[in-house]
Amino acid sequence: MDSLGGAHIRPEIEVGPIRPPQRLAPYSHALGVEVRQFDGPDQLGDDEQGSAFGRLILLHDPAGHEAWNGTMRLVAYVQAEVEAALAMDPLLPEVAWSWLADALGVAEGDTSSTYGDVHVTALGGTVTSTSSVRYGDIAGQPRTHQLELRASWTATDLDLGRHLEAFCEVLSAAAGLPPVGVTEL
Image (cartoon, rainbow, N blue to C red; front, side, top):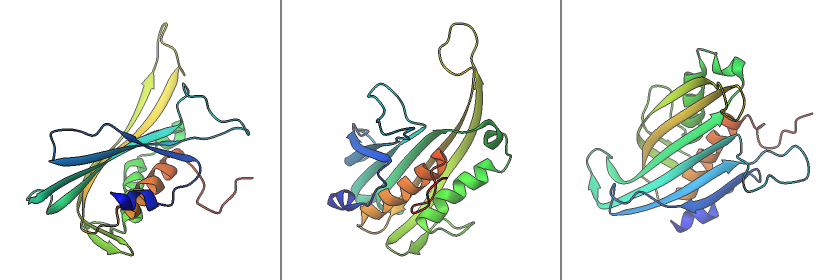
């Protein structure tokens, strides 16, 4: 888990420990991750939510787990607000899944990779796009659109920092952040 601290994370992304699940594996560690987008020099207040957030959970069973095909399983959850046009795009689930597969170096149709510093096997998950309409006295935008990605994979290497970096790449894409090094005009 020390390698998680060495991950290179974009300044717009906040990472912090959260309570991990207790019964899924003998050892677990969880991180809450949120994209903070700023309209100006002031930061968001503690009570404001960013447009995208997620959880990355590390499960470790030294005895191994047959379904995991290894001893370390990463479980990822991403939720992001998206624009209406994007939410209605029938290819959104495929595109969102490609963000994860590309970040982990998994080729289309595969479930494993050895890509740079990331070694992954048994990748699987779901992508959901929803639209909600609020009525009556419910606070918030009258119409919202969300993208959810749930995935898990087995890490076959010990550089968990690179797995966290890949997860943050997915969260950045879901939030609509420009690629690193690109400035919006």
